[in-house]
Each structure stands twice: as structure tokens, then as C-alpha cells.
Amino acid sequence: MDKLVLEKKVDSILRTIQRVETHTPATLDVFLKDIDAQDIIVLNLTRIIQSCVDIAMHITANANIETPQTMSESFNALHKLNPESVRSLRHRTQAIDSSRV
Image 1 (cartoon, rainbow, N blue to C red):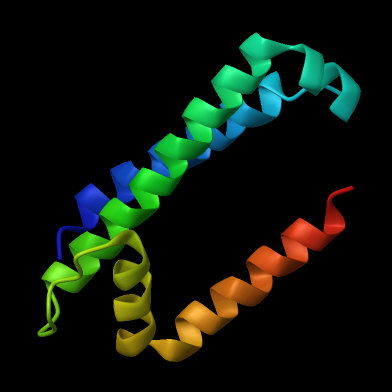
Image 2: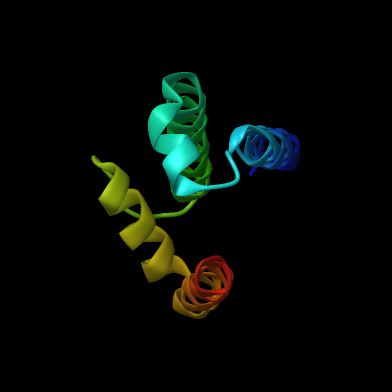
């Protein structure tokens, strides 16, 4: 597995998350009225998701498993490779999500 490829993808995700945070309006009402902010956020969230899928595909390509055909399958394949890691990530993501209001 090419560690440099994964590091670049993770760096890209972190930069993109910063961009989303920078362009997220203070309130939902402002967000709903700001079409430019909506576009920026949707575009960058799409980029984050695609980078996560790229990472999953990169990892699964180096494993001895069937190549996933969809985004969902790529994450299911990661789960098959390391259920505890994926479960831990899910819990951390849920914790982050529940802390945001």
C-alpha cells in the first residue's frame, strides 16, 4: 500500500473540512439564504466523500478481496478487513456529530 498516496488523500480531506468550516454560516437561516455558501459546502462535502472512497478503494485494492463496485461496498469491504477499526471510526464520527448543534 502506498502510504504517500494515503497521506495526500488525508491531507486533502483535512484541508477540505477546513474550507467547509470556513464557509459555514453561523446559523441555519443564514445558510438557507446563502446559495454560494450552500454550493461551496456541497461541493466540498462531495470531495470529502470521494476522497474517503478513494482511500477505501486503495486499501481494498491491496487486500486479497473482491473489488468493491459501489461506494457502499467499499466501506463494507473495509469493515470485512478490519471490523474493529471501522466500528471505532463509526463511534468517533457519531461522537463528533452528536457534539455539534
